[in-house]
Length: 114
Ligand code: AMP
Ligand code: ZN
Image 1 (cartoon, protein in one colour):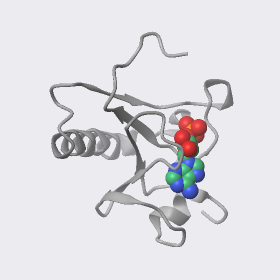
Image 2: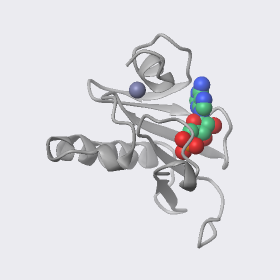
Image 3: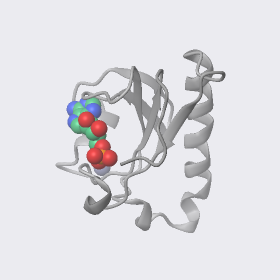
Image 4: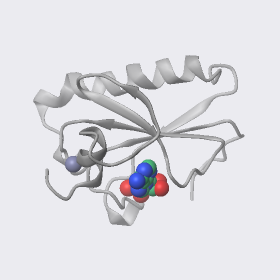
């Protein structure tokens, strides 16, 4: 979709620090990291928010977690733990309206998140 930052990043039209890509998903380093490791796992398909997911997106959503597992293994996060978060809607802090999964690790995590 035109004028969508994450569509541009997924299409290689905007610079990013890419840590993973396949035909359905890309993962990049967040430009404003909130932890020593902060990746954004981004389905290439333009889905604005979690509320816009459809039944046919089931496999795509599953593949996001397969990518998270792979990135956890590559970054030695299995033992220390990590968090995968989706902000849905501006009230939850979503600022880019193309669905993405924050993957945070490399420091202790507090609960509940603010
Ligand atoms: P959210 O607020 O949940 O929509 O998350 C959007 C995230 O995208 C924020 O953590 C931003 O720091 C991050 N972000 C914004 N622009 C870029 C960019 N050009 N490259 C990488 N991350 C970005
Ligand atoms: Zn998009």
